Image (cartoon, rainbow, N blue to C red; front, top):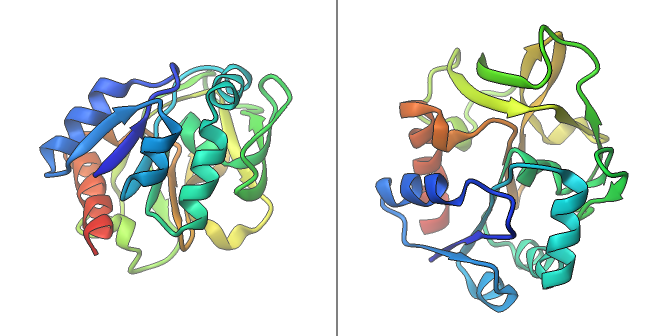
Length: 202
């Protein structure tokens, strides 16, 4: 079972439907106990970093997420859900979950802010399981005004150009993070979610 964390700041229904479409058994939950006992965890997100962290702390979900990742459970953070894993979020000037060293900053320049629409995601390494069966020049759907700047570049799996290049995918031993929305990215997004489900089953 994959727990989709509901903390009042995510497009929960679309990610739930997309994961079910690729064969996952999912539970949408705001209960820390259910998150801790799940086989894998998805943290979606739309909205303000400061408000999202406040809601998660109120419900004890921050500790449940840390526990799940420390136990080595497959974890997928989407958009704000990836940003909240960093040390600090500039929107609201709040501490994040601190699961990787890095800052979340406002996009300094670009054709238009927020960055909304389709853009290319360029993998930096060959053979990453997150991109299995996905073309190297694939486009995904973005909707954000902030981006992650990791301190350790080793976890940066892909970049996207918007005014300047920035980290759009993070891959570590325990965590996948995407700045784009795979559930809104058509067939390539569904393939990425299928790759996540395959990781969970392994």
